[in-house]
Length: 273
Image 1: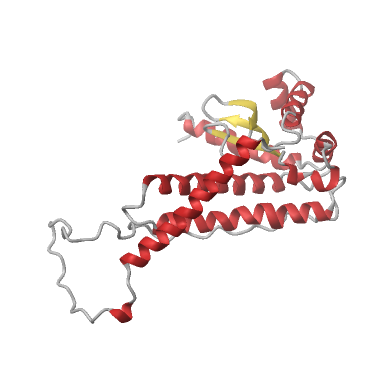
Image 2: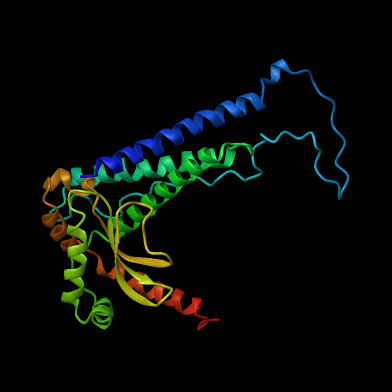
């Protein structure tokens, strides 16, 4: 379970962001009075080239940002009735509520950031950006998580070879991965097998929330350890959920991600022009 400290912090951030959105709406309402109450104004001459903006310009005008492109809820990439040990009810709820909710909230908070007046209080801007980062992380990680499910759990020779090189054996890697996952049982977070693009190394990454992840890393295998990913089927039995996760993996997807990540790492090092 999440600690009371985590819950208090999340509640505070959510309250700040909500208050910020209301404050920004109020600022816009004050800065943009109803058109019907304003007399028609003659067209203003164009500003001569090279001159600074008028000193009378309102500092509360919206920032000159283009409208953010809406994020789209991607459908489940597999038939939710066909996975072993993970029920259709769980998978559909996870997708339609947790993942889709993150996408919708990401769109909303990005709209608020784009429309924020120039003189918005820093604490409001900061709270909005914190929420955007969290929703963006949740959206991306959920999409990667669902995409590496729907298989039969059969291993990939390419990935196995990389695991042996990085960890000594596949068994050593899997023990490390499962141990990191179970450390989050009853709580929240993510566990990934990632390629550290900075060091060109495979690593197991533990994350306690949507914003905590490896800097400059490419997630290859993603496991959702938030309780909503398994509680409906397994209650507090996180270990059985991890077993079901491994039984439904698409290692071909992981292998493809590894190939692309290695190509990116080589390009970053200047080995590919």
